[in-house]
Length: 510
Image (cartoon, rainbow, N blue to C red; front, side, top):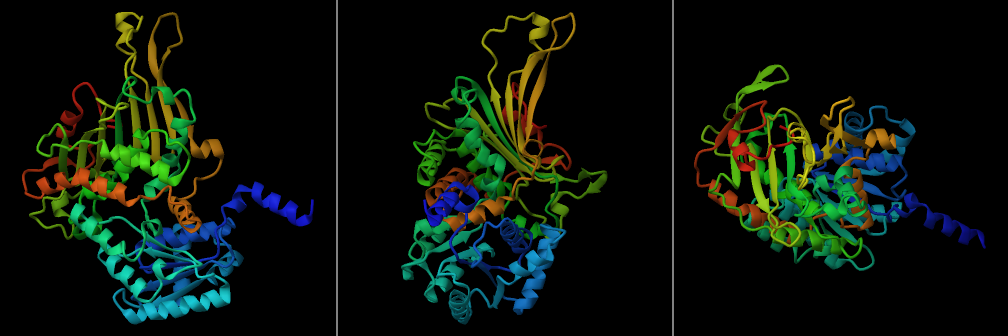
């Protein structure tokens, strides 16, 4: 075997090397914004320190602020230090900083796109980026259309490319309702084909969410039980302990349902409820997710047994008193925006018919936690004494998505001693304890997948459209006004949420 053949075999057998993408330029629109500072550039730097990026890869920031290349690099160094790596290796940083550059300009300025095109051509010539482009829209949603048109107007969209790729990454929200989502898609479709559009939902980049696929399909103790015969109900909770802070003006145009349930929660639900795909392939996996969403019947927005909305009032958080939503900065006094939303949905197919899925999200709840709970049914016959039987809880699988990624299985065990007493106990798995390293950030995985051209963890248009079709009737009904339920800050939500889940069940946590 020749040296070259041995090298090729070594590369083929190294999964790390197999995950190194081709040379490219990552162009971040909104490069001086919060997302770029907190998530995007720290994630790219982390990938570079792990040698998961090609040496030719470059990062170009685009924003209105008039910055030099060096000023942009200095700002990104501070961002990485604050939000990613407190102890920066100076040699590594210098190498990464040389990849960074900046093009000032407004998103509606045609000349800015011409300057960007000329800069990209220079990088191709000097750094060998080969014409590959990843355009990341880290900007306000109203600029998605103008940026896409600006890219196309400068001849940078994929319709104009032949030997290289162009990909467009769009942050949520993809529209604010069904009509605006369809309008945005209609704007993008002539400029960027579906296979070039990566609609990012950072929840899908979290290790615990990705592990749902393995946990379910690779374990015999779970897969045969994952159906209506053995599952009583499913809960998905996305709880935040903070209020809206200084973002009251923005949040009031969104609300809990748009912000969390339409995207994060429904994406997790589709992964939980999907049928096993015929192969581990992006389109086959997303096909099965869409089937789940299409099997969800319409939600009765007028029924408190199907949907609850509420807002927080004044209360306590970490030992201090906090304001109610209507007293937060920039929130209009006549607001009818919900800070808490809970839904009961069903998946009307052979696997899940009759099993309720309860989704909830809220701000100013007691703790920051995102969890999935699979509540199994009680055993049909329990040959235990009456007094003991009542203390035997049904099994429960809890998948912790954040902040402490992992899973725990609750089951019943005998208490040591001469009497027959039982108690629920837990078997716990935590990523940090098991693998002795921190999970990569969601954006590390997703940015790497974008560069590799792997769309598995990104939402396809039919997924997004169907998710809007599910929640849009709720939003339309709620926009007419009506009374919102209320809950005190620092509690788990309004009493109406208890009525939604029913007297025989209880929210977990709560």
